[in-house]
Length: 302
Image (cartoon, rainbow, N blue to C red; front, side):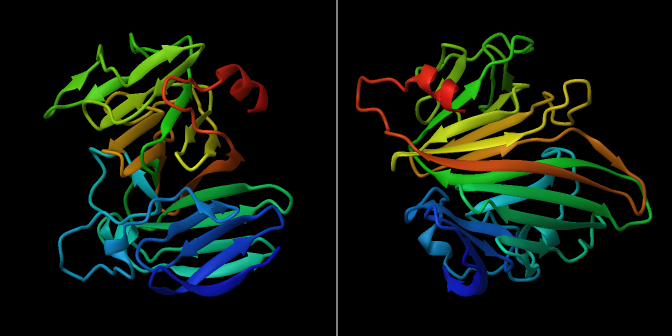
């Protein structure tokens, strides 16, 4: 393991975690507490916008949408603004070999405070991420975990299907406008061999799923399979408008947002909750035109 502080993407206080498998994680406590790199053998699956190098949010300016491996607190449509968490400066520290923690300031509007703990496995490209949300206010707060990782664009999302899906086509589509389409048709989306495959930019960028399998993968054009694992609680309430456990957002071929969503939490003053994700990277050949991902092999390996 090799952990150190470095300058990266215009930020001076980044924390780098790496191991002997060729995996490296770079964390940025400045400007939102993000992951700037999750790579294998020098290939980064995290999307970084060159125009945002060294970007910092100016107090009083409109909220921005930073690049990188972001995390957030939802539900998306009902939680109050929380700019101090989303864009503010965090405190970073190493907590052991291959381990680090990012701690937010107290958000002035929501009263929430957040820690994100990262642990890189010594002998594999596997990263465990735990987000813990504290209610540091004098009132009850209703919220949930919302992961908002931007991966490099043009990839293929592979989501295992659940037989109990409420959606006729195993996904919904948002838009155009304030509309949720529960029977969408899209040439870039299909169901095959127990998976929902998103093969490229859909007709509308934002999609939602209610899969209860607790994992999904994203195959990048650079030949890396990025997998997220997490716990799904089918008997609990999920607070998104359509009770989603996953949202996927494509922006052209530039980026793809990979979003596990946690169940709704009701926090009394002083209470907290945590939600964990396991990230994995595997070399995987991106299919040539006319080819398909071998889903049987994918299921066997994952």
